[in-house]
Image (cartoon, rainbow, N blue to C red):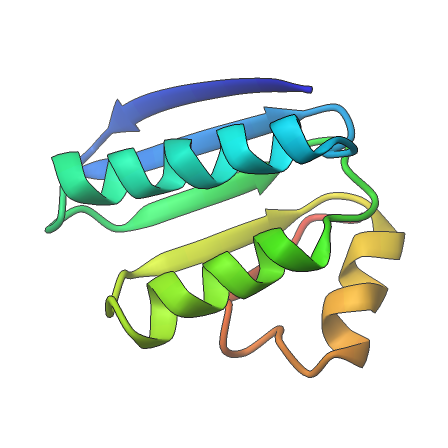
Length: 103
């Protein structure tokens, strides 16, 4: 898994390439998100899952915490239909501001 963070036009973008498969991957992603929110609390944050088709429940739980408790403005770009289906089945597409780029 590769994580790249950029800031563009007052928005922070975290681009995740590859599969979030290990505990270390999950921790690294959660830390990157947390750091981005702490460093730029007024910036909206977009997480772009480039070729990720599934994310661990711990990452989903952390995203929900950042959105609901920390009031972070997060959007999630989904490019794989499997990940879109997972978030849709969990009824999280609205809450996570999912942007469908599967086409």
